[in-house]
Length: 313
Image (cartoon, rainbow, N blue to C red):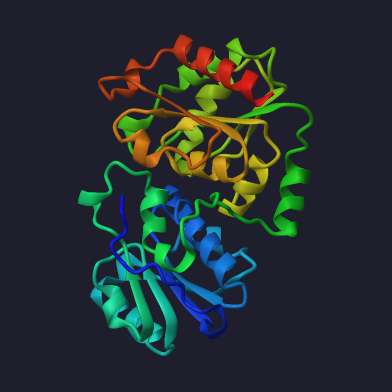
């Protein structure tokens, strides 16, 4: 897509404060991190503040170049939104980048305002590419990787709690609604079919995925570590970095796994893999032609995963 705006860059010496308004869901938030990486590379001495949601804020807290986190809580209604705007207006930013709304950028004090491109003109693009369009006049044509962070303390906690030796398969059995969830007995069948390729399975997810984890463990023929509901988001990221491969539904965990550098296989029911697959050249996807998650077979997942394992080495 041709960018109609001027291609001049903003001088790094005069850019000291940047505000980025991120998206809400975990996967969407991860897909905004290439924008942060591009801005930090272009303005390494600038302080980058963020507007994020209560849950996704944990993803950004360990980032070494992030300044202040402003949390937008939807539950607080318009009163909370006005309080957020008031807090943001206390700072005059050199650049404000709004990847979420069409209007907030105009309510803030800034020398330069950049906002998201409309969906109608970007549906053919990956979400990361769409987000980077918003800042192209600042950073040029670049496609950074997604990135996340974990503190040394979180990494040590995870390494102590999960002493993984060898090749471990990370599985995310849950998702934010049932139409995205592949049957847990199918995940167990895949893991059992590949038991010669892995030393064990790590299950990741939230408290809501505990029942799925219990069902998986009851059917698994491999050792299983169950981390569902037991870790913070940075700790989950630290645990993913210890694994060899990730398999899961279309959810935030797949994007976190890609940011951790894993080869991933995401199973799509409804949704657009072109737009929402994990941002990585090592990200594989399977989607039933009818966009029915139940149409995906165990055999197809095993075959795809084996081919990805060969490619990954």
